[in-house]
Image 1 (tube, rainbow over the protein chains, first blue to last red):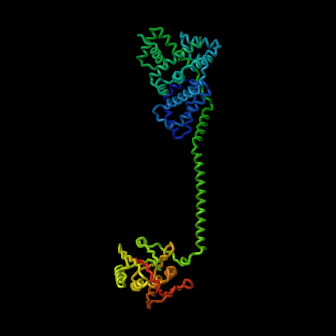
Image 2 (cartoon, rainbow over the protein chains, first blue to last red):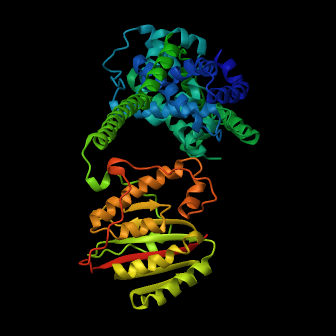
Image 3 (cartoon, each protein chain N blue to C red):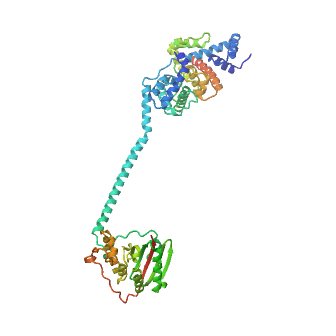
Length: 205
Length: 326
């Protein structure tokens, strides 16, 4: 389903221009359509970065409010899609840094009591076989471990991983959202995945 | 080919993410095929990516849209503090209107009080019959101010005529014939001649006697009699030579002002009477014309009789004669 959304992104951006223009003219219906179109994706990205559902909901609201308020200033130099996510990610990172809301509980403190999950993760990290994504998604314990490990990443690295692997952005889009160079995105993503694996391994020891 | 592990990871990640060119992809595939370590590392990175990608997507709370709209509405309301400012502005406007209304009421009361005072307040005797003086001809009063002296009379006689040259010549000759050259200052400019006389009553009477013979050549004549108060002078419009003589020859300035005031009223009434054009003819003694009875003042308004000049009035009088061409 996510892949289907990603593949539809170019078409969405065409509609975005129309909706944004209508929204500028005060069309509340267009504004609602923009919100409905992106609210789940924005919320999902924010939640993966800040990990707290309440904070994520609040930040999602703030994002759309800020977007609607500033939509007259949107000049279309970048796509609405990247502009929207830039606002969301910036708000989220600033909020996390400012309020230290991130739940950085050590994975050691929360034992992997579920043998099944721990074994699945060991298998996953054994790199003998490629893991089936559908199987991972169905394993609740495994996803919890993954989310907690993700939360232990550095903010900027976590943002890159989320934008790439959760939202499915390409490197250029990530660079546009984060306001960085393409090479920075490459190196940061590479370090982030390497660190994430180390975190997962250390948490299993 | 030996590749730095850091760069190797970047290359492998880019390969996983589909960010490499065709040539780079071929290069990576060759590396993976020939190097087990690279192949293992690739699987590690792929699994890591798969793990994150497999995280379930979470939907936003159902009430998200409504909450966003509510927040926007609340912010709009807060942002519409100009509305509050408008309320304040409205209050200020209302206050200003009240103040203006109060000021208008005060002004109205003041005007009414002034009017009532004008009606009921006792006026000085000299003002009782003083006709409202019209604005002097522009330039005339400024160029020829009435000179205040301690004499029994001070005033200005303004004559308008179409026969400027004849009148001027006559006045000059009369001044010379009566030996008043030393007492007169003559100025002529822009169709206006100004004769400023400071002389005895007798000398002025002689001049007035002569002026009476050309009075008919004037189109209008007005005598401005200066009073001893700072108010406007008493103006006798359509004044005749006889009236001028009468005013000037009063015993005191007070009498002169009173007579002038009476004559001002008299002439004003006569001006409003039908057939007024006949009055001048009557005054001139044209017996062929139908005689229309002139209005007669009674009581205090009775036309004052000429009083003889007392011998002790040797003080100088001031009269400025202004002759203006029509």
